[in-house]
Length: 175
Image (cartoon, rainbow, N blue to C red):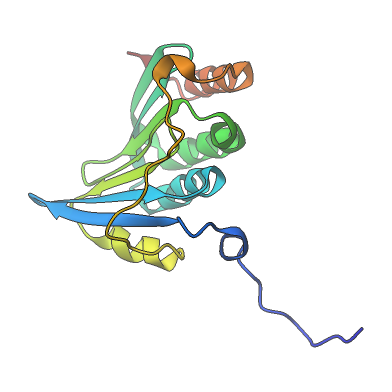
């Protein structure tokens, strides 16, 4: 066995990503929209990573389709929101069924229940940030073929409890 010295660190995304990973990027009436489709873990992690680019105070909206509960919070500290998303990442990627939106007056990141990420912005900065994360812009992305209706999400009591606990920890208001 030979040792060749320090090997460059390979990104897990590059090693195991599906060829369907990609995004569309459009602009209409001053609003740029990115629609990102990739595997569940990558999309949820990308949402968490991209929130780092938002301003220090954000608004948050959570809709748990399984329990039917919705929460909203305004002017929340970004580190607290990012910590909450980090705690939910594994369960969100495994079960889906929760719509999560983090937004400011300039930008909005929304993870839909089918684990597709949408980014709405008044600037095109997200195009360059997504390309920097190894995603490729495509003319069209294939939405999740396994989309199911609101009532058909499989039971996930751990996720329902974790979302309720997160909403309580952030002092979100029920909508």
